[in-house]
Every structure is written in structure tokens, then in C-alpha cells.
Length: 412
Picture 1 (cartoon, rainbow, N blue to C red):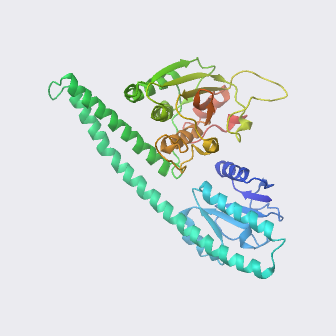
Picture 2: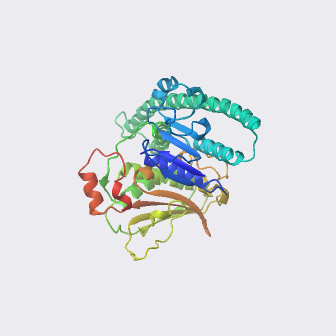
Picture 3: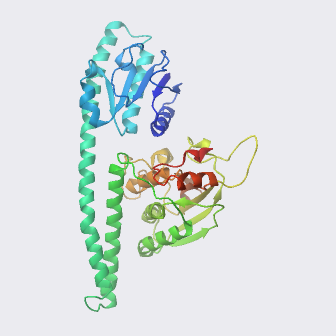
């Protein structure tokens, strides 16, 4: 199956590749192109926001062969195009589920075109056209729901910050002395408020993160400081279950340019997940060390050892492993545990990661890193990698302080 992607969006290209890899037994080829230079023999064309939802006249006009990705604000104008009612449209930001559904549809049409009769194809096309229109309406409703949730969560954070401030005021004894028992109650209350605030921030980031290009504020920082702050935050949760936490962090092999608050959030989310599923009296191990990462193996669940003609063993990243003594994660759920819509059964069921792990994936992607989970002999292990910046990469960002993406030279 040959797919032409007319887009300059690197994230969309990665999403397309990831979706295609999920179709077992499907032989595919993803070819980048421009509107002026499109091969005429593709099974599917994906047009990314080129101001139209109709293919160029020189290409086959069969609507099932074309998928148009547009912004919602441009939808009304695009629908005025003749023949638009039959166009396959995805609204930005494109979700993995929607793209997978359209690719599967195109693949089935390509396979069936060799065996179906003309009458059967006409009936099928009419049904598919109705389904596409229904899908477009669902995308609209989903974006409306997301916008409402983002506004609600944003408003929800303000009273939480106020309540946290009042707890701090009482703990400082500015309004009168407190005995130790009262202080402990206030500390627990403040800890719970902080957890709610983090949950609200997580939901807000997941709601608007793909729609708003936030400019990262990278600075040189030490991972040890981030870890110490994260351990301070989850201390009460671990102490409440008598969980022992051991930490072994080796020195970085090179400078880490990160957003410390964001990496702290990654550590807190993973550690909270570990504390949740670790039994009373269990243990959590945190280990950090320089690591040699082959970025070309990004399609596999876990990073592979670098294999090049000219071998170099110098670490190019920093890796953190967090292992807990809780129940194993079902093997079939390991590739999807960091997805936003992964189902969650509750209790001791670790098949769904929840919002915390989804936000970890988003933060690390913005840092040019990655996160994954695997089952070790002594318990589940969550790992993530942060790239070590070269002088060339440092200069790229320091000379362009407004950049909103990981340096383009990251994989050079």
C-alpha cells in the first residue's frame, strides 16, 4: 500500500508511521511529497492543511483515496468547495484513533477493489460516505468537549491555590499557635491539595497541549535536584504505606538542558504510580546513569543498543529507571500504557496508566526524550531518557530563545 503524505508536520509524519506499524500483515510505503510533486499511483493521499479539500485535477478524483487534515477554523470555508460533502476530513489536532480508522478504511478499499463488483462498490462507498460525515461530527463534538474541560479545569485550579495558601498561612502560625497534631492535619491537607492541583494541571495540559504551542523554557539543570524535589512531594504517600525508596544517581556525562519543573512532574507522576501499586512494606528503586541511546530504534518498546559501522560508546543521554515491587503490567498493555485514552480497571489492575503517565509521555517528547515500561524479574520498571546536548544543540537553542521545539539537530 503506497501512501503519499503532503505535509511539513514532523509530528503528523511520526503519527502516520506509528499507526501504519500497528497493521499486521500490511505492506506499506509512506512517501513525503509536495502539492506540486505528487506521484499519481498512490493508494491514499493525506493532504495537510493546504487550503483545500479537493485533490488536484491531475490526480484521480476518487474521494476514498484522499484524506484532508485541516484546522477547525477553516472547516466552514473548506466545506464550500464543490464536492466537499464527500471528502474525508480530519480535524487538527489529529488523534491516533481517527487516523487509524481512515487508514484501515483505505487499506480495505485497496484490497477489495480487485474482487468487488461495481454495484457492491457503489453501495459500500455510499455507506462509507455516511460514516465519514458522522465521524466529522464526532470530531467537532470531541473538540467542544475538550475546550469545555480545559476551561473548567483552568477555573478549578484557582480555588485550590487559595486553599493551599491558607494551609501554609496556618502552618506558619501567623494566625495563632498550633499544636503538633493540628499541624500534622494541616500538612496532610496541604499535601492532598497539592495532589489535586497536579491532577488539575495534568488534565489541562492533556486537554490543550496539542492545540497550543507552548514555548519550552530550557535551562541547564541537574537531575538530582529534580529527584530530590519529587521525593519530597511523594514522601507522605510512601511513608503512609511504609514503602522504602532507594536512590542511586550517577553524575551526568554532559549537560542536561531541561525544564526542571516539568521533569519533576515526570518523576512525581511515575513515583505516585509506583506508590499506588506497591504493597505495604514494599520497595521502590530509583537508578540514574549515562546511557548510549540509538534514536533509530524509536519504533521499538525499549531502546536498543546502538549498532553502527563506526562504533562509539560515549553516552549521549541520561537514563532513569524506577522499579517497584508491585504487580506485573500485562504484556499486551505495555505499548499503550502511556496513551491518554488507555482504559483503567482500578484496584490492582495496571493495564491503564491514567492521566499521569500520559502527561509524562507528552513532557518527555517535548524534551526530545522518551519513556517506556517493562516487566523485570523483581517487578515493573518505568524508564525514561533525556538527551545530553552537544555544543551545536546548545547554540541552536541559546541563539533562538523563542524556539518551541526540540532542536532540529537532535538526531544528527
